[in-house]
Image 1: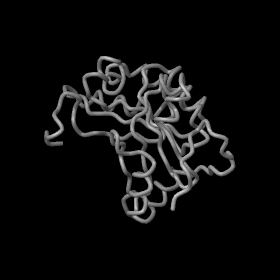
Image 2 (image 1 turned 30 degrees about the vertical axis):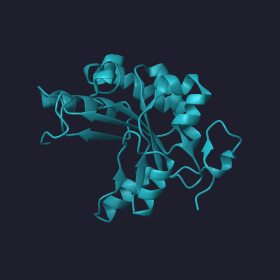
Image 3 (image 1 turned 120 degrees about the vertical axis):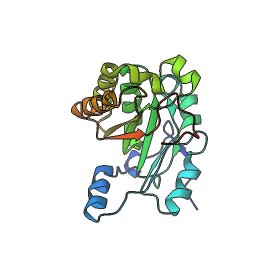
Image 4 (image 1 turned 90 degrees about the horizontal axis):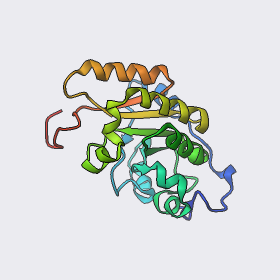
Length: 204
């Protein structure tokens, strides 16, 4: 049995939540010449019960679904709906959709006790996300992405990662973006091999 679900606004004891070092997991897997098994964020699926199930099947690191940073920082009700956890929910990467450094930094600070890392979604290609200026829309604003990574690192005090898609017209832009966020302190970058306009069934 898993412990009771706890929202981040509950009166749970912070001492129960011990951060895991995902970077050390990467290092250990590299030393042992084995892959690190990671469950990527999946819309509507990557909630707490699912995260426990995939860990029981051997996943090393598990992501939450993308959480919209603006509602997360503005509403305790949104926080209760979007994120529940317990002391066994480690290591966990909290993925946010955000469109400003203020939003992403505030969300990272708010969640830091319960997160082993926070991730900036720069890969969601859905129309609503592009219209809102989040997800893959950020690929057009590399300087903003740099500022968002810096804000989350400074305010959250946890590793920051970035999920991106490849540039559909010039892969050198993708390389430049990766180098740019790495220089700003991103702990790792996850690359979805399709560009933003590609269909999910398109070859990678």
